[in-house]
Image (cartoon, rainbow, N blue to C red; front, side):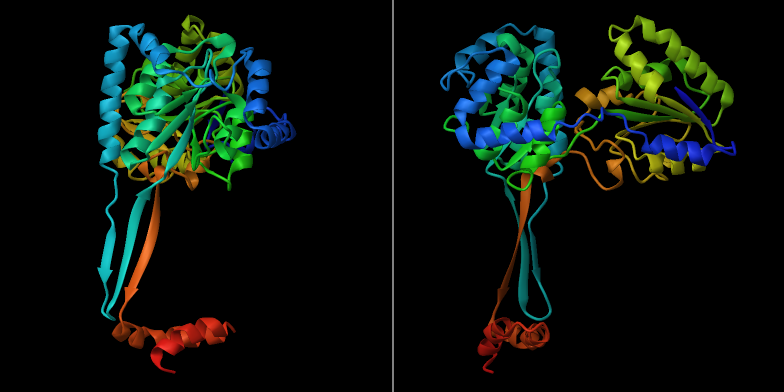
Length: 429
């Protein structure tokens, strides 16, 4: 874990190096992924089945790739009632928040007699990738599928790997609750390829969303343009702004809640009190051994964690904007006021009783957020990722007479005579 003090003469150089330090393995998988995608595009189901047997140790046929309703029902029946109830609460709150995002069509009659409009339409089909095996996240199913359903997407297909044939029942329950229409027990780059190119069994989609490993992320990068994607997700991260009135242990556990995701996750505390910084650092070290994922959390904190001592909260806000974190927790006496001074964060959690983990599951806003400082220009998943805009224009002769001559002038200036003539003919020229 690195310690920074903005008063130090070498702070700027060290902080700049910290911002630019890579957190993921330098190993490239682009060639391997390109070969898999090309194979899926050429051979369809046969290629998907071969890679599934090789990587997931699961032999399938085109008929058994899709998870059938009877299997889904049986799996859901095994889910404990408290988990079912928690899932339903989360789904209800996520749906309510995303329904509130839905935009309205635009209609404008301007002073020149031209009618202008913008219409929103849902995508036809979306492919949701869900990690499988040990990394099974039913909450991610809700966060990806519910906005698509709210937006009006008719076909929501899901691919989830089933290593050695194992599927997580809660993931299937989340899929049913979210309105997923098709579930396939395949994963990896081959699943992304099936979504992008289509096979005899899996129809192609318009957008691929959802988290995955390095191969899945690279596959999404390579198919972008043929289909849309949500983002290229990197390791999780949190910045916590906390004052000395907070519990050091609570802050420590909040930092570790990100660190336990994986060794490349990043947790950063920014405070203005040196004694509080020391207390949190000590609390983190005391807490790590009690975690089931202590090895992962410890590596994350050791290699990528940081505590930054700022002069004041204005400086802390400026540092946060430079970090542009995926998650931002603010625990000060005026969290809303401090948040108003910060522009770049994927999602913010305000107050001592609003840990980031609440947003991961049941608060309502989406937990699919921009990572790797991309909150400077990117936003979290929303209904807008499953909608597209179409603008339209309607003009009568009187309106064309008013604005058409200017269009003719500009078309001629650009040397596009057919453009100019298509308007001029209607103007009687």
